[in-house]
Amino acid sequence: MILTLAQLQRIMPASTRASLFLEPLNAAMQEFGIDTRLRIAAFLSQIGHESGQFRFMEELASGAAYDNRADLGNTNPEAIRIAAAHGTTPGRFWKGHGPIQITGYLNHLAAMMALHVDCVEQPSLLCEPVHGCRAAGWFWSVNGLAKWADAGDIDGVSDVVNRGKKTAAIGDANGFAERKVLFDRALKVIP
Image (tube, rainbow, N blue to C red; front, side, top):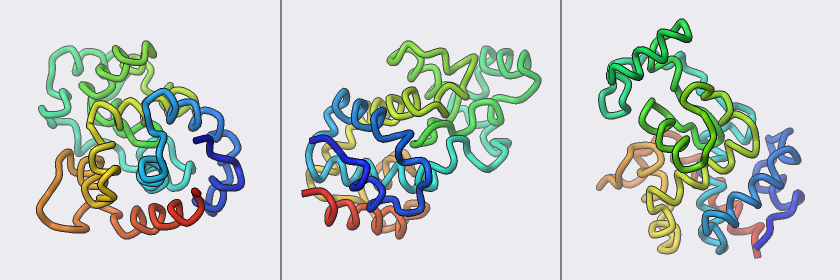
């Protein structure tokens, strides 16, 4: 299923950059099996929220809150060394990048290994449409998000993207209301 520019603009009406992302988005969705109505709607709801409808390809916060996050690999001596070589700290250097906001040293490292894009030394590469959309598709795939999407569980998809795991509470993911609006809108737009 190929998404058209008109469909993408209807799903993300605030986006002024939809045309830049359409082709890379379609390619990434095809590459990573985001190929059903429910999967596409769930995927678009997540990247739509995380990127502010393609306005922000880098997390707005400084990333300082991630500096001591061992779960993101930011306390790893290699992460500290690389970030210092770039004149910063790990949390700031590997804050969220791309339409799904790949965050942390370990996630950037895993994306680099999978996609063959040096987003460890150059995390801003994920801010480019092609690399960013592929990284979002890769994230979708390695986190098994199709399972939640196939069940129509936008809460499950949102939890895994935002919280790293499915939670018992419904709607507790950051920005859940917007994610749900984008999901519902996509379902109306995609045949």
